[in-house]
Picture 1 (cartoon, rainbow, N blue to C red):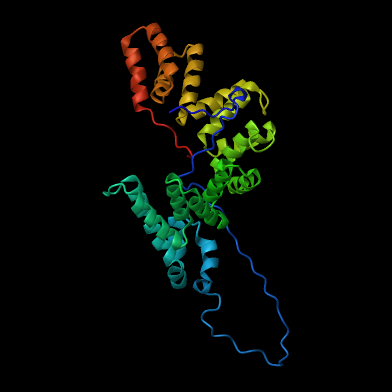
Picture 2 (picture 1 turned 90 degrees about the vertical axis):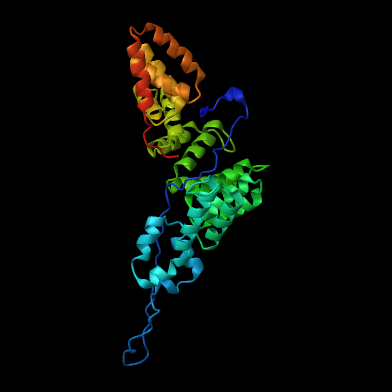
Length: 341
């Protein structure tokens, strides 16, 4: 699959937003604070101690408040919170149920776990999970509605998740405003920035792309490269590739060939096919033919057809067939480093 990530002025309005995220990667942090005002008692004797068992009981919180606190929790965090005490376990029961529904929804959507793919059943499970307060289920239900072309319903679910502090919901809501006809730049950047500041790398990359291309906002290369670097350091592969190009041409960053090579290799090792092609070319120019063949083979498998032509040229220069076979075996055994999707 082609991985076009670098803005090109000659291509006019060929900007495309990122696909909506399917994986829930980083969650936002929540904290609550309360202030208690002390009032002087008019009685000369102290009041009797309260025996109200509900005082300070987490499960006694209104459900909407509880949802805002716990809705973005991942399953391990939800299980840990549920094990604190009985009242927490009872209060968080709807959200634990939502996780089970979310799991079944994913099985029906992708045809996993011994069930046949069924988008309607997947949507039904996601909606039931969303009704119990899970922002993960809200986002997945929104994705299904978007695929069905029911974009207003999708946006409504993204907004619910976003307002509960879910970074993926915030990102998807921002992208929805970018893709709207007409687009709403103010709302798009508002939600993308919230998501990016919550540490979500896809939103960080999307903001960088908008600033780089001057799409819905004024072009700002310095600000764009700041967000590219944040996303790249967070493990986002497309951002790694663009950081390499920025260093290579000195756009938004000081020109630095060494750092450009480092980020290009990093992107290649994380599975970016275009980076594999360019890194393979660099190795070829340095005379590291076997390593070059491996990266070019990987790039060709990833859809970079030009890599195959260069690879054939190198094959003609290699002295023995065994050397070529060794390089191909290396490519067969290669595994991409973990990356943030």
